[in-house]
Image (cartoon, rainbow, N blue to C red; front, side, top):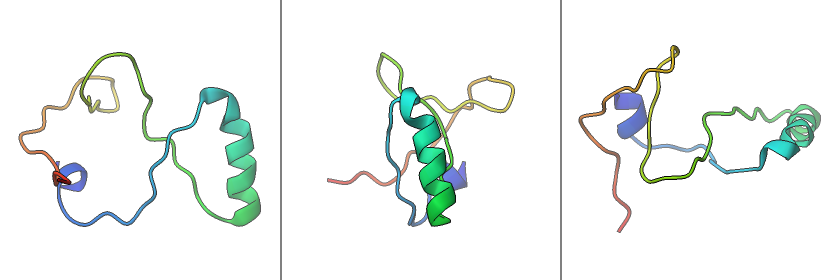
Length: 67
C-alpha cells in the first residue's frame, strides 16, 4: 500500500492503445529505457488495484491530491 500511495514518484506514466504494444517494446529496446505495463483502462469510474491472482486489494489511504 505504501508503494502505491506514499512518497515521491519520479516515473513517467502514460497510456497507449494495445495495438502499439510491439512498437513500444521496440522503442524501449532501442533506447535502453524500460517500459513496464502496469494496468489497463476500462469503462467505469475509479481505480482498482488487483493482486497477482486478480483479487481486489483494498487501499485504506490514497495518494497525494494535486489541487
